[in-house]
Amino acid sequence: MRTLEIKNKMNFKTSIQKSYKTDILVIGSGSAGAMAAIAASQGKYKVTIVERYGFAGGTSTQMLDTFYGFFTPSDTPKKIVGGLPDLVVNELNKSGNIFLRPNTYGAGTGVNYNPEKLKEVWDNLLVKNDIQIFYHSTLVGVENKGEISTCIMFHKGLGFFEITAKRIIDASGDADYCHWADIPYEKAGEKEPAQSMTTIFRMANVNLTEFEAAGGKKILKQKMGDAYISGKHPLPRKEGSAHEMCQPKCISTVAVKVVDFDPLDPEGITKAEIEGRRQSFIFEDFFRAEIPGYQDSKIIGLSNQIGVRETRRVYGEYRLTKEDCMTAKQFKDQVFLCGAPIEDHRKSADGKSETFWQYVPDGGTYGVPYGTLVPKDSATIWVAGRCFSATHDAHASCRSMAQTMSMGQTVGFAAVQSLDTDCEANNVNVSKLQDTLIAQGAILEQPDKVANISRDGWRNNK
Image: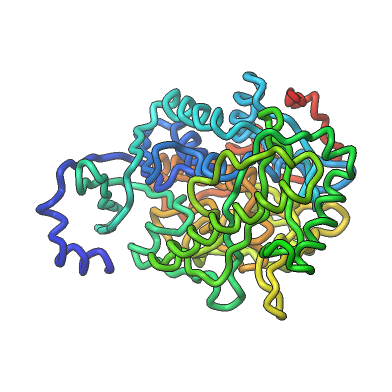
């Protein structure tokens, strides 16, 4: 094991400052991990979650401000995600911190929210459900003995501490637990080009009325393409998006594009962070000089870290494929739905950096089977979030936050069922698990009716 070698060198055991025990341990409190902990807390077991940052939410709070995946991307959208993920949106809605908006490229109706308020919402949901939380804590080693896992954590103030658990949910994004435990995975970039990274920047004092009167998204696309081709502004791509936020006169972007750096390498991720910030301020100059309504705007914030789309993808009991997505395949053991297009941010054959799209035919959805969330031959481990079992193309479709929350919801309930019945992760009664999900409001079959937004209570709070 990787951890045993490191332990001998660093003498972890004699350096452990505190020891904790729990029943279900969740590594990472992104949208998948936080939702997994909330679902697991519905059982009778102690649930613990660890997170390297000082807040929950992961990509949902560090970088983005829109949940995609709740609705199908079509002219007649259908709501395809429900259950515990609705709790998050409902809480934001109560405080007037969401509005619904269409996506430029047809990824479906997005639920735009205030990411700072969302940090509090995640906190409240975790605390309300009596989940033990360790922020500012990083997994640095694993030791397994039978069904018991001991996770070595590091906190910069305390040093090393350990958490012993009966069941583990790896929602770290980078499959950190699986890496330390020698669970097989594919590293992004080994077969197909890895997706690019993105630093999100936000701008204030944008005159959105002037922007829309000048052509809105159409003028942005035109001006960006012209600047890219002419070289007047050294933009990294010819297309990108800038959308209105909950905060008045503010916009958020997906425009920066950083390629050819390894986010799992300390030198690579450092260079990527620096490049992402450099590009952000090139875009600020471009927006102020070229886009109507932006002449008096300024950047007011960058994402907490550069956005990483894929690193490690675990080999599971089942591996979701491009064919599964593009044929809208349904599975007997499916545990949630996805209708998102393949959205692949990478370099083209000529070295240019653009985005490739491919849509599920006829606005359909595909099912995602339980096996994608269980590492091969796993007895006590589940994965959720962007480290789940999928090929590069399928992963580029099934990574919206509504889907990652659905993954978390599923594995949280599965871990409880595993403990209740003393069964292994790969032998969970999926039919019973599906009944539990449906009872919570999850949607496992494509609905026939168009989504009724008012029925769900999600108002446009703009």
